[in-house]
Length: 602
Image 1 (cartoon, rainbow, N blue to C red):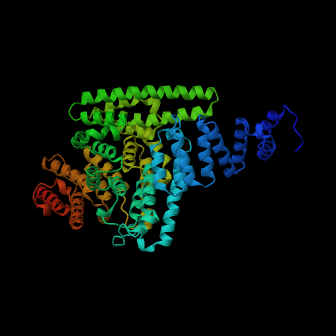
Image 2: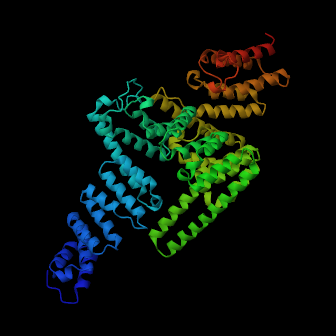
Image 3: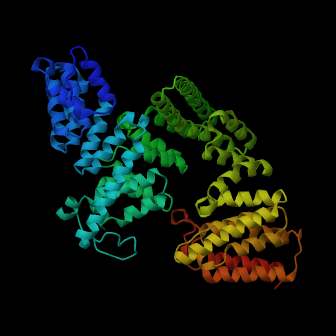
């Protein structure tokens, strides 16, 4: 390189850095006299260029020197730890990162420490740091961080399958009965438990409950008393939609232990409120009052308090929720202004941060709005519930959860044309995977089409559902799906309520075919309601039907009697007759059949 004239060093060096000629800059600085090289600007530029030429070893050495000479500059300490991490010196990097205690650097240090833990294959530690990093919500790399963790978890699982076949990975999911492998040293060293828990947590966060549940059952089998607290907690969450009683028992057990995952209290309270066990939620708040401030955010405490109050004082509950909604609405407006100002100033970083802040606040705002509307939903005041939803339209118009609940409120008011406008985009968005859409959404959309004389659209949707169910039966013969069943039940119930029993009952009968797959506690509950309504109107001589129709009803009940011996009609915890053998579909089908025959004077 040609000699640089005195006074031109700064211009030349920064021009080379701008052109990313880092090696030329390193040569220039190293050829300087010690007096010039060992200045703060000289060392800082040298370390910077070493780092961007991937010479992390030299970069860490220079940054360590800078941190020692200028200890008040915390950035040098952080860059020293970052260079050690990039050099693969994880233990040294961890010590350097733990030595940074300056205010304002907590989130950066946690993020770096999570990366170091990830490099050390401590995936549980890395995940814990990411979850407790409050500043990570403003970090656009969050999804990448979790993606890396998921990749690492899958890598550990694949290695475990190859190296430890004796641990029975995936056998429980395949339905193979295996003995517990116990909490052995091999299991501990393989990190498989942590990997499966991480994979389940990430899938659960993405709302892919089936994949999360599969990850938990793929885990090496252990007896329930051998499970660690994190596994038990995750099992409880993954089982809530299928077996809420078991899920609650596991969470309650964890709360009685001396240590438990910090999310346990929050999840137990939210799930109690979701399932309507408000008294139990209130008891938990009272019992664990000393630790609620430690484990619950202000938002969760206020929200749970308001939901619990709904049972005794709806007006007070609404007031509390309204106060929360107003505060959150103000925050959303401030975030909106911040996004607009940042975009006008072309400050992309600030705009991203403001947008993430808006989205996080919106996630809190929507449940509050839902809880407000539910107060009037429970009172069957659907018009007022609709008013509450439209008050939040400026923030929630593009949110699928909000749109779905607006559709339900419109449907209950028989505003079918308006309901279609909200249901249809949700269905079309998932049309190629239509069974991922809630069955009640599909049912309500079909009914709305029928009630607005759009029968062809309803039939096309039902054909699509039937085709998808047939494809799924072919791929997974043992899997039960109830989408078409529920659609037919809802349509049948609607027609029966309008007095058209012939068509309504025919839909109900079709909904339970084939009986061995569709006849269950819930489906029978709605089917028998239609039959009881028919029998009631026969008794009052309000309706008279064709003999062939009554024969169809009797054939249907005969099929229910045959297939319903093992199908209970109420949950075990609700049985009060003392005669468990009578609480099944077979007995109830016989009773309904006898009532019809009596009306026909047989």
